[in-house]
Image (cartoon, rainbow, N blue to C red):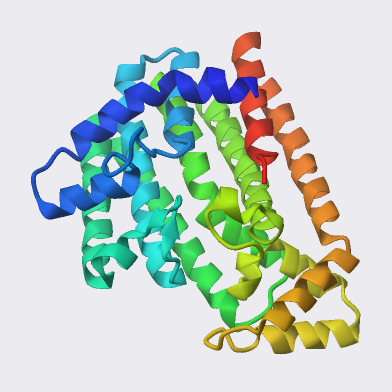
Amino acid sequence: MSGRTTLLDRYRGTIEGGLRRALAGPSPLDAILRYHVGLADAEPPALGKLLRPSLVLFTAEELGATVESALPAAVALELVHGFSLIHDDIQDRDEIRRGRPAVWARWGIAEAINAGDMMHAIAVRSALDAAPDVARALLEATIEMIEGQSLDLSFEKRFVTADEYLDMVDRKTGALFRCALRSGGRIAGVDEEVQERLEDLGRTVGRAFQIQDDLLGIWGDGDILGKPTASDVRRRKKSFPVVLAHAKAGDEDRSKLERIYEDAEKSIEAVDVDWVVGLLDRLDVEGQGRETVRDYLLRACGIVDSLPLSADARGELKDLIEVLARRDK
């Protein structure tokens, strides 16, 4: 657990201060944004892990830049992540976010769209305070992230291969991880080769993070996650476990799985949820998923060893990667 205490907590207060300044406006929308990120109606503040902005600051600082010079980019990245969650909750009809009503569930869809749009605009403004090339990189990552979300939604209409799933993950989840690490390196002025290694690390960590998240979406503890157990099955989400099961199942089971998932607009029956989870268990999908996460962890640690970081910094980064990819149910 050392990565959680030494890396994420190190920058938590700094990022919180940056978010408070960025969202200090007097309008009702500013108040909604403060609620969404956890700065309002929560004591202590419910800011989440602040993973992506922490990676920006850590990478920049360990490679020779100051935290102050990297903070606008870190805040911008967290705000882009935040705006995507507002819109994702609308699209997925998720009423709960981090144990509290989602923005759309509390203020309505129309105002939630406004809030998400405004958060994105504030993010771009913050990125421009860092540097024009940092802002451009963030916008490119945002485009990829939105493309990934669109791909994920399109999967509701069909089953996909593992390669299609990973392409979606590299966009929807990996884009901001890659941007976080590469932005830190760019602010520190490292050469292109190191920036490419940082980007590769972000891609690898993004895959491990998303696959682990997909496992929790079926086998996670609902009380901890703030959503029902097997929630992704109830939503007929084509997450990693279902993609893997579809590829591994026999013809009869595959046909039944396709029938259960064919109508995304219709509520899924409890008996069908139980059958799908049972199929996943019979095929040992959870075990294979965890093995896949471990493989990406090992690959990520190898990339960390290739970076021009101190031994202590490498150790902190490896600890964090392991904690995130193996986070508790």
